[in-house]
Image 1 (cartoon, rainbow over the protein chains, first blue to last red):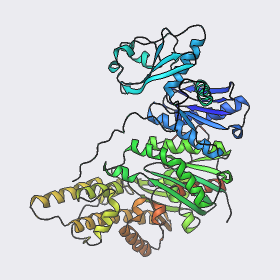
Image 2 (tube, rainbow over the protein chains, first blue to last red; image 1 turned 45 degrees about the vertical axis):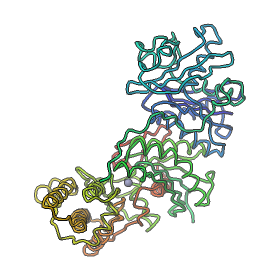
Image 3 (cartoon, protein in one colour; image 1 turned 60 degrees about the horizontal axis):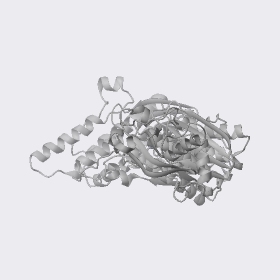
Image 4 (cartoon, rainbow over the protein chains, first blue to last red; image 1 turned 90 degrees about the horizontal axis):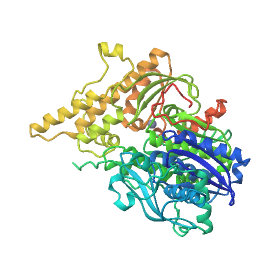
Length: 230
Length: 347
Ligand SMILES: [Zn+2]
């Protein structure tokens, strides 16, 4: 039983996946209270699935990129849950890949992604976006550029016109012109769990590279100025 | 050895602390510090501290268990500093404690960092007399606390109205060209200096100030006075007598700290004074406090230096007392509160 956690975007949540299907998913929209909402979400997901903590056999977490304070809540929760249960260290998944995977799963149904490529752009605050570029294949969205961080207007022109998902296109529609109608905006932990299962079983085009160490993808250095030696 | 086995997590500033206590016995106190990473910035950088807490958390918990000779599965409760402190840093500890409580299926206790500084002395000197007077001095706090019950009832008598005492040490150290953190360096240099060489001001100790701010502290004026004195000296082209400046500055700080603490004991009829926080490691503060407590008939308790600075043992010690006194556990949606008032002992 896989427990998946993500706190990289505006949703905070957890999901349980049994290898075939998502057994439970609990997430809440709140960009400021990751620390308060995550542990109850894990607990509620277990209750909803009728499972106990001792039945979890593996943990995965979204490692961003995302605003650091919230992102760390998810990563450290995954690390310590695994430690506390005596499980192997959690595996990380790029949170932008989970948004691309959501688009891929949607594409398998009716709406379809217009074109072979996709842009995922999320809110990086400070008038910037976290972004990555994907090639849509029948077996999944393959990352071909990024993750990066910067002002939406600084992305290459051909990237800015791609069909886009995530909150970046809502925030900067003048720069990111391809935002899809009813695009997934925040990471769903259930979809992240589904992606992790496919990466682990080797059926996703990024299986060789998609599973990451359980460390935040910071992309930015801490803001601090070194004091000059006197 | 009996009592609940409690693991305590502390991340309010730049130390990742994990302590393990059984009842009133400290089994192990593991600390990972990012102080060297901050030294080149001349002070604690919150984002650097938060990143370091995340990296250190799992290894520090593992080391604490290994050295204490316990398995996580044997832990009866988890306690954590919920505040006050740096918001992002607290959040890493609080999330970790919740995850551990959830993984182990044991109660969680979110506790006040200042209360934990007082509570830690039970592992060193036994149960706390009720009430006890607490004087907490560090880079983050300067508080006088009346403590009728460390698990439930703490009253703030006074606090700094500007800089914390340890902050003043850091700033004066910088003026004197000594490294960060300044406390240990000033203490060392001052041993060769004359503490009455320069008459630096004692904040909030006279007339109206003493009425209005009876048990409050102020160190900002002192820090400025030291900087001005050093500047004036440099302007004359004469060398700065670093040892005398350090000794006179340190004397001004510890004089006010101990004078008000002893006065508070007398006015509230408290016979026991406990000093905690990083500045409690200062040798002159310990000596002068002992002298004045002896003269006033007050018993002085100072935990050993490693338990005075921020650590996990103090959080575990307070958690264990919460368990033993049957205090209610915290909920899983416990927030980290960077400005948690000292009166709020449990979160
Ligand atoms: Zn402290």
